Amino acid sequence: MSSVLVYNGEKFQRTKVWYLVFAVIFASVFVLSILSDNVVWAILIFFLLGGYFYYSTINNQVISIILERNQIIIGTRNYPRNSFVWYALEIHPQTQDIKNIVFLTSKWHMIYTFDDSLEHIRLFLVELDWYLPMLGEYNQTSLEKFSRKMKL
Image (cartoon, rainbow, N blue to C red; front, side, top):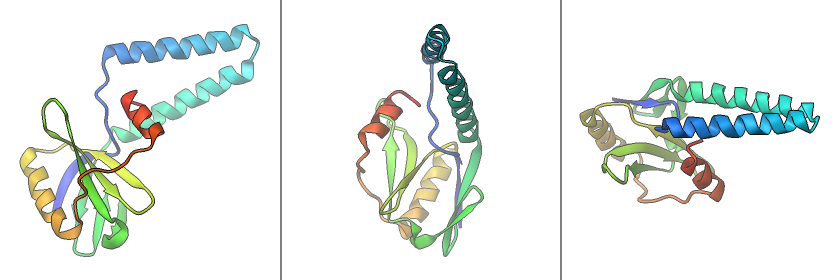
């Protein structure tokens, strides 16, 4: 039985410039909505912003992935061992560090950012290889590529 600590989703390293641009865009859309007497759109923007902050808060929680004989436990959810077909690793292009692990099924995938020591990650991956085959590369949709590029 092996385990590793991960963030509850993909974690992005955002700069102050990213937050400034995000705030300017949000404020601009809000002001334009008010100036054009579109109160419904202004309220909708606040709901979208609240949902985004809620989602961001959930993704900043550190959880564990535990490998057991017949299941993989991710946080509080149990997945039968045969739920996943492959796993893939994402490597940081500049540092060459292991950044994310992606669990893939035939229809969907889940991405988690590692938050553990390199030794724990290595031991976890050695044991995971007994459960799942590693996929060299996986295809992402255009929307996913765009959202990851924008660090959403």
